Length: 271
Image (cartoon, rainbow, N blue to C red; front, side):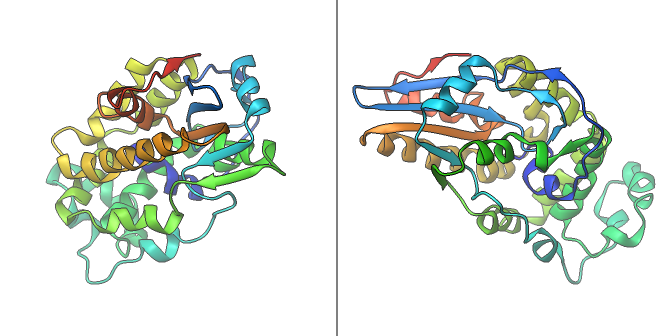
């Protein structure tokens, strides 16, 4: 999920000093006679040294013949071009009066960005302060672990960034307002992810979408529906697959896990 717009924001982050921190991210499994699919909730950008490859995750990595992520491995370009806007008012005029002082502190460097892109850039701040980097994110590590094996993607980076352009300006301004108002969102999500606490994870994402159905529908619900349909189709073919997507897509009432169970599939929590 793009809570705090982690996918694009990860492209802006710089790594910090190493840390040694254990994590037990949520992991699910579906299987039948000849097919096995694991669902791993990821964080796209992590501080260095987070140890998330538990025995259960290591087993899934070792057994799977295919890795499936949101976008292809090695996708690093595109945000800057997609972020540029024209004819937009200054950032301070795109926020509520109570937020103008904070918005002004970013200076004119964000004035030329589309509203969603300004939100991405602001949301990157707390991640950077935490030492988070896409280089240490789960997907980057998995791509290395799966070298020589098949790696598929559910979407493209261009397609993901284009989703933001489809949002009405009012919805983009909700993203901007919440990026300014909720600098602790990344820390809460990371803490819940590390313990595999799905209820806390769902709660950490909820503020971004509360009262903003266009955001929920565009960034979460429709994508989850497409991904769960892909998994259902994939269950019809033999093989072992590790699906690793943003943790927010796997928790809550409209998650991929919930949709798969709604289609009658047995999805068991293994970690």
